[in-house]
Length: 267
Image (cartoon, rainbow, N blue to C red; front, side, top):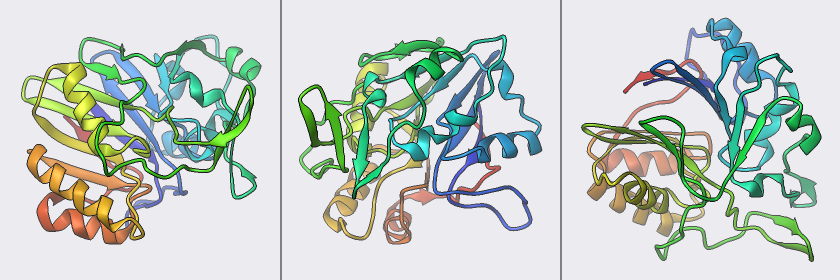
């Protein structure tokens, strides 16, 4: 598998790509091509062009959850003759708001149906023999996902949003599993436990993505570090919604590497 970061909060020195507080990752596995999240704007398209990546031949666009820093780029996604799958939890279609501002998917369902073939599911969905979309993540531990992130609109009105639509990808290899996450609103430890359950593999080799760890939730950060210390064998690539204090805490106990637009990994 090959991954290329197309949108993130950070860029690298002397690599002249665009950054924004968002996430988008291009993935190749065998002859399949995928896009995991689309960032906040058209930044992912501009960076893909500079990197020589053709996004008009994708097999699927996978959305980690419905917030606009991961779905905003859909408003710029070109309409092509080839319609890729749109894979996500059905909750991405819900209206969402925080602090009085919309943080929803910025386009209509009709707009998306003109460009994609829908595969909205709460259950795990294998994209190919090695890559699986986890669907809805069970919340099993006692230190993650305890506070709502704004509100979402259901049939009977607005409610606290615990972002049940948050999901992740897992790549299964002979040596273990590799996790690709958007914001980890479900909790990266909950995600890891479900990834092990779905794949039948208990060895976690690497994680890349936003971990939703900030200095205000020190207890969660410390518990997450302890869990990952006990459960991951390889490198972790925290990015997007992981602040500097959390990265320092992770770095004390784990092998942590920097992430920026243009980062290319081969697993």
